Length: 177
Image 1 (cartoon, rainbow, N blue to C red):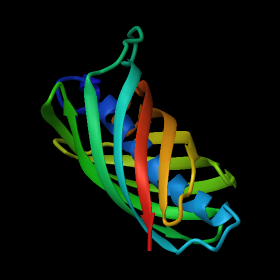
Image 2 (image 1 turned 90 degrees about the horizontal axis):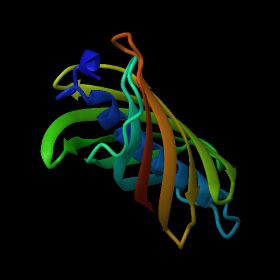
Image 3 (image 1 turned 135 degrees about the vertical axis):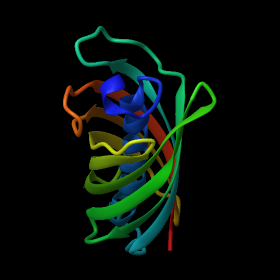
């Protein structure tokens, strides 16, 4: 990951985690509207925590858990009962040390009341900018205006050439208003 410029040669995994977290947040909002009980409010805030389960740097072998954590907060807006746009922001830490800060816009599509697909575009802005594509699939369950989510994503930092590959898991909570 050195070619992506996040930190310590592992920037893509940081971005992947951020992307996963964002996907979870967006998916949760669309699932609420599809739940059938009552129309979900059109806005939500999200709190997310993600980590990289596996990572493959360009031209190298797969590595396991990356000892990273990405914390995110976000805002989402439903465009329809099954489609939402969101923006998440937050830092990534590797082995307890700050590694990067990212902005993550995303599009979430609820394909079932409890299942969603997400397309996230992670943009690390510190220490260096990049673009990480991060599609994912998630599970969500609405409890009134609160919705926990769990999302599995793959990611690849493509903004600086030499794409890598990562797999991330993100848990989150959405609150609709």
